[in-house]
Length: 229
Image (cartoon, rainbow, N blue to C red):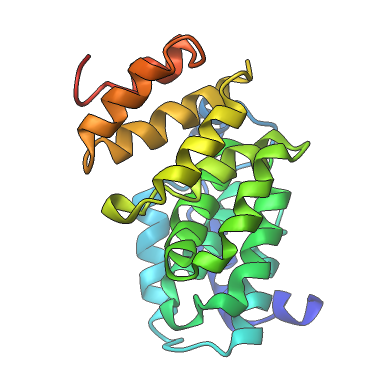
């Protein structure tokens, strides 16, 4: 992995963030995210512009290069570098194959806050799960994981499935987690239901009514936010 810390793409991305660092904004970002993780103070539009410019010189990546670069950025101390690692993971679409699933799973298991977990589960894992339904049994098992971020991922891995949602699995997962008092689980239940309500409002409304006693108030409010009672 150390070899990839010196990869020109990694070096250039970190150097750009260091050059654009703003201590005042960094303090604000850290306070907003409620985390001890350090920030450079580079907001998303600037960071995304940096990535677009720098990655233009790296049109393609080999699978091992893709994984090495993502992990080299991911294991950096500063949050924006970790974000760039996730952005790289999403950007190189040809590398986002079934072979990348173990990498995404590693990222998920190492997430310690919602910002990175939601990206990994919703933007990296969810599209891949939709293409490879054979992964559903593994994802279903995450609902029993001791790490509540992994349990949250068992929900958000379905986030991008739209009208192709595996309704039975979604219902099973939600009901396994509905008893939890953890805010991030309750919020995720509401979020995935709200998102699915764009494609099947009647099912979501019926589900919430049927399981009114099991779902938390937060989950119900979030689920019905777009469609009403």
